[in-house]
Every structure is written in C-alpha cells, then in structure tokens.
Image (cartoon, rainbow over all chains, first blue to last red; front, side):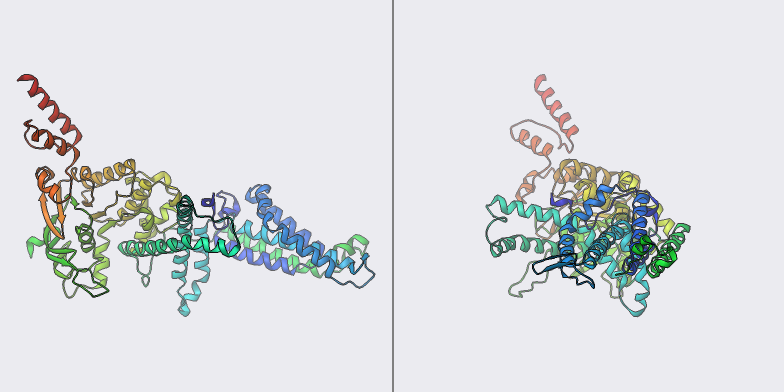
Length: 286
Length: 295
C-alpha cells in the first residue's frame, strides 16, 4: 500500500499540456497564481474557472482524478468558510442574527471567494505542474530557470542532482520502510495502539535502521557515480535538451493575456455592462 | 616497458591495508603481495570466500582504492606512478567500468534511459552521440522497450542489466563485475551472466567477474582463487577445479559436476579429468555407466 506514494502525481500522456516545456509550465503556473490573487470580482472568478476547465479538457485528465485531488482539503475549506461566514463584519444589517452569532452578506461572499480561490489554486497548479510534468523534467526546468544563479556561485546543478537522486530513492526507501515495519511487526511490534508518545517511540526501531541503510546506500551510490566519471566541478552534457517551441511562445502569450484580462476585469465598473443588477453583481468587489 | 602495453591490468606485488580507525592493533592486509596480469579479451572469474580480498582487488583495479604498496598498471598507464593525477584517473575510469553488487544503489536517475545516459553525460559528449550510445547500450542488454520506465519498478535482474547498459554507454574495454549476481534470483543471474559472456565474445570486452558461485566461475576462461589476500590458484577452470581437496581446505566448493565426479572417483569409479558444465557432467556419467555395463 505505501509503496504507491509518489511526489505529487504524474499522469503520463501526450496532450498539449504534457508536451509544453517544463519552464513554460513553471512560469505559467506563477502567472496563473498571480491572476488568482489579483481576481477581485465574480466575473474575474468566472473567467479563472473557465480557464481552469479549459486546461483540464486540454490535458485529457478525467474530472474524477481532479476531484480526488481536492478531497484532502475539503475539511480545511469547510472550516475556514465557517470562520469567514461568522467572523466577517458587514456594513449593513446582518442577514441572520442568532445569539452572539451574526451572519452578514459580506461574510458569505468572502467565504465563497476564498473557497473558489483555493480550489482553483490547487487544480490550476497541479494541472500545470504535477499532473502533466514528470518529476525529472520538472527538475530540469527548475535547474534551467535557476541557472542564472550559478553566476553568483550558487551550485544550482548540485541542487538539481540532489533532487533527482531524492526522487529516485523515494520509492526505494518507502519499500525499505515497509520491509522494516513488517520485520518488526512479525516480532510483535505494535505501531497502531497506545498513546501518542508510545506510538512515536515505536517508530524509533524503524527510523534507526532506515537511516543506517540510507547512509550505506548514499556511500555506495557515491562510489558508483564516481566510477561513472561524475565530477561536481566538471561541465556535463545532457541527453534531453529543453527547447522552447512555437507552442511554448503561444502559451506564454495566452497566460500573459489572461493575467492582464483578469486584472482588467477586476477593475471594471458595472457601468460598462449597462449598470443593471446582474452587472452590479458580477462586478461586486470585496 | 614495451611488453607491459599488451596487458589491460598488470599488478606487481600489490598490497592493500585497510586503515584501522581505532589504531589499536595491526590489521592484516586485505590484499598482500599479489601479482597477476590480465590480457585484453580475457574472461576471468575471481573466486574466494568472504574476506579473501577479492572485492578489494577489484576496487584497486578500478582506482577506488589506492594500493598501499606495489605497482599497478591499468591499460598501459601506471596508476601508482607519482605523476598520476585525478584527471588521469577519470580518463581511465571511462575505459574500465564497474558493475556493483546492489542494483538499487548504482542507478541515479528516475528514468531508465536518463540513467544510461549518466556516464556519457559526465564525459561531456555531444547529444547525438549520447543518444546513439544509450540506444546501442540498451539494445545490447535487451532492455530497449524499458527505456522510459522507472527503475524502481523493474526486477533485480533488469535493474542490473540497466546498470550494465550504463557502463556500456561509456564504451569501456574492461568491465569489472563486483559480485553483481549475488543479490539476484536464479533467472536474473542467468540473464546477467549470459550478457557478460556475449560482451566478452562478441564485443571483445575484457570481463572480470568476482563471484562466489562456482558454476558461474566455471564458464570463465580463467579462474583466480583468492585466499587471505593472496592468490591461491590461477589458471583455466578445468585445471583449478581439479584440485578439489585443496579447494575444500580453503573453504570453497568445486562446481557441482566436479564435486559429483570427485565423490564417484573416491568410490572407485575411474574418469579422466573433471566436467565443468552440466552437459560435460552428463557425458562423463554416461561414459562411466557405459564402462560399468561393459565389464
């Protein structure tokens, strides 16, 4: 069971989103997150939601997968929504007043905005990054984006090598943890009952052998890497070269226009849409 | 100097002592006064029980360890010379690859082909050349279809084949296998050994296989038996394995076929020499039985 753990979750595929350069997606994700926080009106959120749905459709990842991704945060969302609803003080009369609890219109609107914001944040960034980008190309993308830092002697390459090795060894170490736990269980160890302190103590016989073996692995791996002529200070070449294509420039343009659009829409006055009730509702600012 | 060139490895009176951190007592040398020469294209098995110094010997040949005493020449370059630099060492290492025991602890990348590319990337080769070498190396070990897989999902034997491909991609002329089959199941072992043999036969790569499986050693063209840091036997398997009693005294077994015929000979059956392979053993038994019937 625990051997299924991966960092994020990558769904291999051949959609446009999968084919984009990881750097495009990293920058795109940043622009998208900025757009989410710049959005102030319902109309802007409608636009953001449409954009996210469009990304999901393009990636051909099923909606049920996306919903599963949101599930872990549902309780947090409910909790913060309740806080928002009860704690926000509005200008006018409260909609409901019950004992010391008062619910204002502003509270409800704020709770809705916040929920939509968090959901879009999770879905949008995982669509662009973890779901459609393999860990290795994500690391490559990060290394390439951070490479200017090498000029001021920050060892970017070393960090990306560390990250690659960490990603490589996560499943191996998870498997090993499983093995050690089973070995301890077979000798009567109990990890699931007793007080918190007791359970934490029960983990020590797992953590110690795990660390010992991890250090041993690290040493062997270092020797193996040296035998394959790895040197930190020497320039290496790369099998896969990241390169921007037409689709990357196009995506950049889409993201930039989209960000500008969201900012602009958040500042529009209802008068632009005729000033009616619907226009006023869509352009309501919090 | 001239005749030294023809050897890929030439060890003269090599001694290696592991440093004892406690400094309390004298540590016996792991390898002591060992001399041998390996010619290009040989297929050598190094045998010995645990602590006999066979792994240390391999690590010396690959310059992971530096000999305490003696002279070592690898591919015509004297490794123990004063002017041998780290730069020279890395140049040489591309030519003398090493496959280790634990397949998990020698794979670096999260994708098979990226891992195979690791060595050539370190050499700073051009992208097209790396691509060519990766494809050639993967097909040499029969793993082309796994190029985009994650290494942790493969079996032990498959991982070890990827590790071999990673070494092959650097185009070495010598490959050392440091107990590379000891953590594998019988199927994985058979795969890896057959790859070793093919590389030796078809690509002319010098193979040095450190093992404690006698049946694997019997397939080599030369066997070196280590004991207490010294070479106990060095010769063709049929010659080495005929010393059954002395092998037993060293705590080693001969291959199964040899042991069987040895026992039969002790019981009074007569047979010329010892069979190394299963087929030879069957022949020997048929002959013996035939002889019996004729009397």
